[in-house]
Image 1 (cartoon, each protein chain N blue to C red):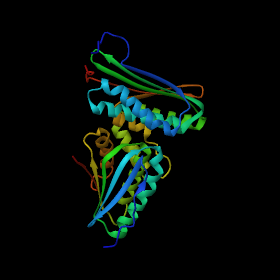
Image 2: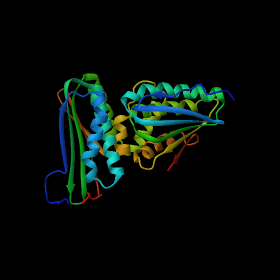
Image 3: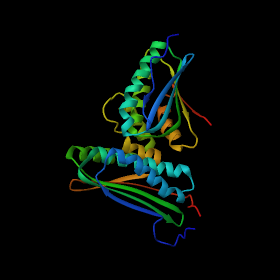
Image 4: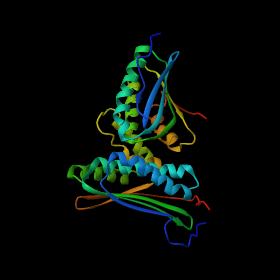
Length: 126
Length: 168
């Protein structure tokens, strides 16, 4: 299997860190996904999709355990990403790992699951 | 301990300021600190902060001129709490028309979650602006959204109530 070409992006206020394990890519989001993070998230998710296709990944997991907030513009980037996967010839699963102490996550992500119930799963992590 | 007969709000905050993007995070933290002692349920606080955040970002993105206003009210009622967030900003004519169109559509929608889902599906193929921030408030915060205009001023109010009792 090829090596991961994605690298971590962002800074102290917001960061995404990728890790590849077998055929699954895990993206760890930390900080606040606000106006300053919008462009980063938008561009990064495009690269994630390209990388997932290139590596033939089965799943991409988004670990939100340390993501304190996500605004509607960042959320929209996830909508576009999921729609891209949904309409792609080669698909992979998208899993969101949520923090039970951050109640906004479950509500926000349920909307993404409704957008593509066959692609998106939501799990709570301790 | 909170006396429900006491008419003073639990929290009342009014800001008049020139909104900037880097102010939103600290403002959100301030709102959280102010409201947390009165909101037992973390979910209620989370919903309030989501509404406040989206409205604050809107005035940062779309205000014209130097001045904007932000109001927060948390008030004890006999059956629970009233929570209200209000923003007031001057808006360019095209932005005013767009906001009115979105807010009128929200008001017409019977089910805020179904309306939000529809907007998400419509926005999926577009790479331009989000257009989801206002609809997200009633769908996820379960707060009612209404607006008023005064010449080129746009006033947006998110209001909700909860049966959760205040901390004692």
